[in-house]
Image (cartoon, rainbow, N blue to C red):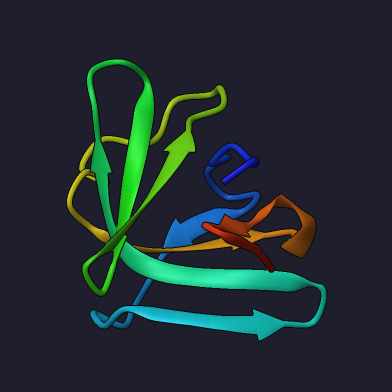
Amino acid sequence: MDEDIVWTENARPSTAGTPGLWQDGDRIVLRGQLRLDEDGGAALDVGGSVILFDLANPPLPDGVDGSWVEVRVAPGNVTVWPYEV
């Protein structure tokens, strides 16, 4: 993923506890469980597929690690090996 997670700009909590992937207008939406690492990165588990992200400042709110989130990204920033979306 060539786009950072910016809380409240392209990432937000999800009310649904199920993974998902769909297009909404000019954005690709990924819904999954967010896992934070100590190096400032994040992994979004979307139904067993792990998508790696960097985190932009400001930091994510407390309690978001392990929660269900939706991340909206531009299609040009999504690469699915060995294809580009």
